[in-house]
Length: 465
Image (cartoon, rainbow, N blue to C red; front, side, top):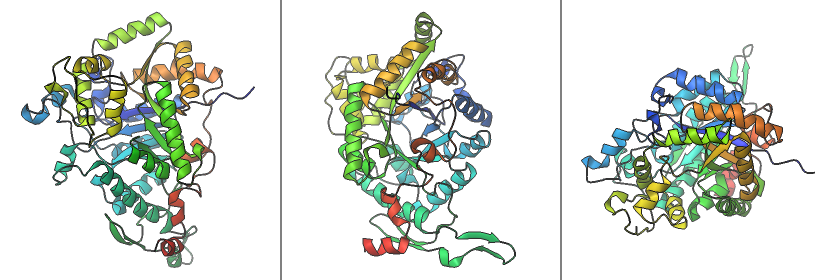
């Protein structure tokens, strides 16, 4: 009998009060209003490591949600009242504190391409990869809210596919810095000879791309992974192409195992078309779990959560995701979805689910979010998660928080032991970097990844020319 497929789990959070399940910050047991404190983050990291989570996956967005009720105070009234990802702090600045109190937990952190330059960003990531001993992942996003573009001095968002073109150029320069600027063995730290690094093994990166230019050496010596583990979300046509070339982990918003299977096969095919293997991408579906010692207890907890949720907050978030102000439609008026310049996969998913009126959307967001929610005792939840893994052909889940830290404590206390008993979940961490823990093939990018071509910087540059 074959061994059951292992289930990978990331905790999905954001450096703010209201992340996905809007309104739940008002629950008396929720600690998310403490997000400005280091103890909130270090306590969370220790909880997740005890539960053998792969990583803490931290979302971020540059800008704020001002699409819903756009005519009222520039569209930010509801966002501010409900705490819909505003205020929000920098996710990268809490990582070193969490790394200091853990040994194995990974950190998948979001950074928006348009808010950074590859040269300085490469140093930031290398620094954290050093401090965490190789536990850093980067969730690559191209931006999707106009407010962020305006805040950065731009007139508005670039066109959807052009944002991916920019991301390709950003990644190429970052790869050159991480993979090629410093050779192996460049740092010798020889005190007797007074040589810290060998000059002949450190090379300037000359890059003249369509969006970025650079002519300098990478400021930081290579970290354990060099290139961080690369995450991405987005299953538009252009997003699939980008994921196939770059991503090692992909977050999908599928609402059924069948939809997950379709997305999974498309992503793996995109990887193959980019010269990689289908198994070179780990695929995670968004999921929320409400559990208790019995089904009745879980349902009671779920009902309690519903009493604090904001369906309208979820709709406001979705308005920003799609770029459409849903407040302008009557409850049962058909919504004319069109091509979006924001998150195209969000628009496509709503249409596929038949969420074509405001009433239907509000019902979908009754827990403050459009995420899938599994409610039941440990056995029932384990059954459903296993079904998603097997039928959806995915690798794991981004487990969003409903109440912090109760959601993840319940999962670690009840669901993890049940999955372990079934042979579905690790009972100990493997040694090594985040990349090695997930793929078991070393700390560095595999040779078939597009970033690996820049390890021999001079040879790769000659081929590119």
